Amino acid sequence: MPFKLLLRNLLAHPVRSVLTAGSVTVAVFLLCVLDAANRGLDTAVATASSSRLWVQSAVSLFVSLPASYESKITTVPGVDWLVRFQWFGGIYQDPSNFFAQFGVDAEKWVKSYPEVEFTQGTLADWQRARTNCIIGEDLAARFGWKIGDHVPLIGTIFPRTDGATWDFTIAAKYRSKSVNVDQSTMFFHFDYLREGLEQHAVQGPQGVGVFLTQLRGDAAPDAVIAGIEQTYENGPQRVRATKEAEFQRQFVTMLGSVPTLIASIGGGVLFAIFFAVLNTMLMAGRERTRDIGILKALGFRNSTISALLLVESLLLCLSGGLVGAGLAKMAERPLWSIVNSMIPGFSIYDSILLQGILLAATLGVLAGALPSLRASRLAPVTALRLDV
Amino acid sequence: MVTAIEVHKATKTYHRGGETLVVLDALDLSMDGGAFYALMGPSGSGKTTLLNLIGGLDHADAGNVVVGGTDLSTLDGGQLAQWRAANVGFVFQGFNLLPVLTARENVELPLLLAPLSKQKRRAQAEHALELVGLQDRMDHKPRELSGGQEQRVAIARAFATDPQVILADEPTGDLDRATATQVLELLQRLNRELHKTILMVTHDGEAAMFADKVIHLDKGKLGRIDDNRKAAAAGHTSRN
Image 1 (spheres, each protein chain N blue to C red):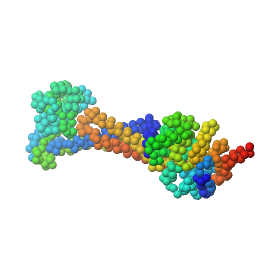
Image 2: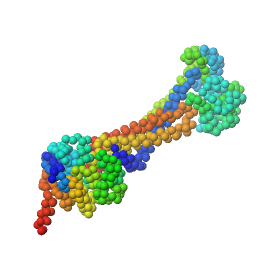
Image 3: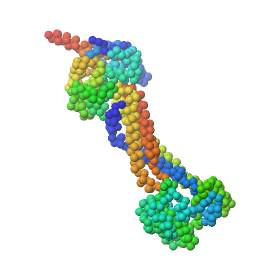
Image 4: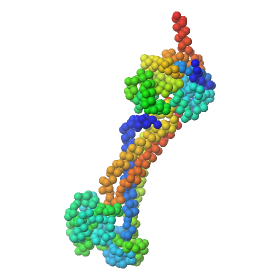
């Protein structure tokens, strides 16, 4: 194999080579990021705890349950305790500053999430005042919040009747050892919300959004689910109990065809780039028709000449793929900070990078196959006669 | 002199638009080893086709071509390629150098097919370039050379592998008269010094005068063979 010729051919049209490799770079970068997003959605499901159930209205996740359900569900065999969870949906200064906020029962929430650990402050600090809250490390980093900072939130689901903002004080920070709990959420005292509603200082739905149901160690989740659902089989409001994995999955399902769309976009990008690279390689092959004839006249075998074009295409795409994978790895952290509240499991694994690089290599081989086949079939006399 | 090339009843036809064109018509020809031949004839007389058959770039439809004792009709594509690499050097009208390689690399290219070390390959390429007087242009790419220099690089490439036969297809067709003469003198000198059999297709009567013998083709058949050496000797005798 005349490697010098191979390299010289690769560099003969530097702009074209860079643009072609660049298009593969973009494709591999996008594929890695999109695949990481898709896998991230699945990771949250896969890492869900098996000792936690979620109880919600059978009608919809957006319909609250009566607060009185708590005491009755607690009596279902296998249930250890319940944690009230309420989606708050407040706005910090501007809707673009979106982050999740939940009203919870602090002590039981901490007990239910052994994967969460305090990095600053303690449970006692959080419990010291009703307006105190705990925030994830990533949320703190995003807004530069420190312990003691005040966070004013505009209530959207729960607006205050006086038009004022809700005021929260940061008492603690947490990080999570598992991707199913993201580090961009604020948790505050459920009772702070409930009191406001009871005092009519706040408008909004009464009751509890969902109950996190902690199982006893020996409890069979399916039996507990059946027990909870049977309790309210005849109303007043039917409930739906699910394992945490199932609960997480419904958020993925709520995204509807988004994962499919993501995969389709990735596939579409790959196809478009394939045709671009194929076009480049066909052009390169045609431009070199005379060179192919010369090599054949000099005694180079068809297989060597085919390999020259094939390896050139492979190197072009592989270099683009390596750069794309490298860029994706470099962009992992910044991208994660943007999407982790929605996709906490977002991570560009080595397997994703390897897959991207392999796809780039496959693209190179496929795009090089056609001109390479043409070159091998070309008779030396024909190749020398053609003036391309 | 040993016979280097034998052509027996070689026939080659082309089909174009339903028409059959007989380019070589049962041609018989024999060429001595170490001689310099010019191949002349009107356009379409089969000169380049014959050159391609002798060079193993194409197969005859009928008959056979034997070069250095090898019947080319018995070789398949891969074997022909291997045979070409070891036995034939080509010089083309359009020089046909690879534009991305330097003069040295172009000459070194056919040597990649020989079992030579990198150093030996390089030394052999440099020697070939020295033979054609381009020792100071080794690292120049074809676009940095004049037409005459490009053709000399092509000649160096053809001689580099030390083949039995050099086939030149209109090697001076793209050159001015002075440069063409230099190239022809070079071919003549290399033929005499290295004793290679050279077959050169040309339209140019003056170019043909550099050869020992001139083969005339007409409509795919052998016309006549002129012996320039005998003619020159006779002219010399009559002048004396």
